[in-house]
Length: 266
Image 1 (cartoon, rainbow, N blue to C red):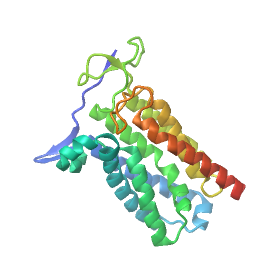
Image 2: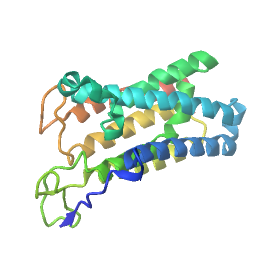
Image 3: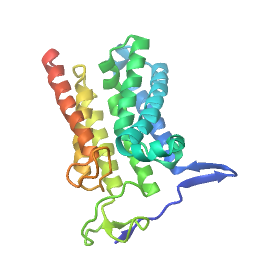
């Protein structure tokens, strides 16, 4: 069986300053968001015709970063570990230790995009359609950060599975490297789907709908291989907290798709 490499979470130490891999993964996520957004703007005439520009992308990145960091941390506190963080309130600020909820970050980004829409007088769905294909590769880097940190490990599996992995900080049982499953599904696979789907003109809200369905479905499946979190509904080996939070995304995505194609057929 494979053994988790037990990476040092600190990538570089400069005196009292410690640069952690987890933070670098977020930096990489934001950098690829900007680079992919630039490729979309410069390579898809329909976007430049709609008035999208690189300076606007810079503003979007700023709003998105605030939404991801604030929403992701608050989501972790409220959805997964309210008891711990309310007992240790200063730990809420310790984002460098890890502990970021995707669903919280997702809600934070939706709020941030609402503020950006209000500032620029753009449609909210127009903005979410634009950013949806830029997000999945950032999710992949985040999951790689989870793997480096040795957190969010998988469920116990058959030791004959070729890639079964022992996480020594947990126990000596073979487990699924579920962080890598999620990087492949929610990250790479979802990116490919959205990137090619969004290359052609689609009804407003359709790209956002595909993102919601794709992420929600991939996350729901991946949760069967990931050790469940002790969320606000308690620990469950059947339907996990991540799956409960993904179900509304799938339903909302279906509603977006139906509404988009009924209102404005492509």
